Length: 249
Ligand code: NAD
Image (cartoon, rainbow, N blue to C red; front, side, top):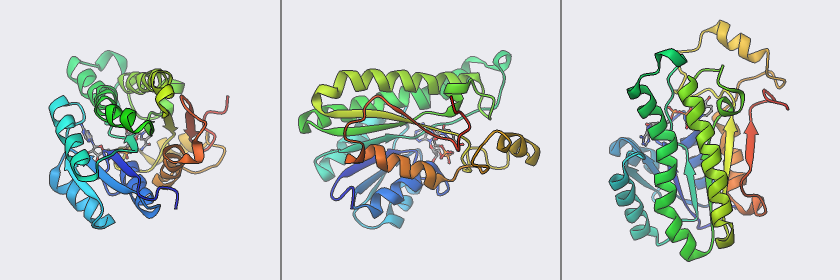
């Protein structure tokens, strides 16, 4: 088992078809104690319970500093350490540049970018004390190719911000044996786009994917396992593309 007795916190992991829950399940199968953090307390508890008794489901809005620190305190109270953080919580909005209002900007940037910063700030002191840890941040191919898949320009900006933040944290915390890496998924079939993509849109997207299929949550979960575990022990500050070849460059 790759994660035996490791403690892994995964944000946005209560959605049953989402990338976060698929990652939580795979991490649990690999021996980790998994903490699911999401907006709804009951949904988080329920998702954790389906993985077994060793796991914990907590409520926190990742963009709310007080809720984030309260959740991380509970994790440390129960397990005493945090080995892995997966910054997965995110929302998107399919709107164009001229339609982005302050509320749109705040909502999308707050979850992906502020949330990644706040959650990382909350776990880094414990990781530093332990002199080890792995932070995995979920960005998007939208950050690399300037959108054009589903999310609007503010989503691309938020996810590009995550890449920069992760690289800077990787540089700063490398001496403490804390690795920080990103995954940039392509189009993965989850509820984030459920019912919002027409067959025509899917066909157009598929024509640009050499592997000729959309991604599954498992495809991203396996990449998170690689980056979260010691399999990637000499990698920090990298961006792992999980997009079926959509962005060969
Ligand atoms: P999803 O909608 O299935 O899951 C997102 C989860 O995040 C939900 O459970 C939601 O409740 C939670 N969440 C939202 N705001 C939150 C907040 N403020 N605090 C805590 N939790 C919050 O989406 P998904 O497709 O599984 O997406 C997971 C991540 O992957 C997101 O960051 C998304 O931007 C990114 N991503 C997804 C795709 C894709 O095609 N599905 C592609 C690239 C990147």
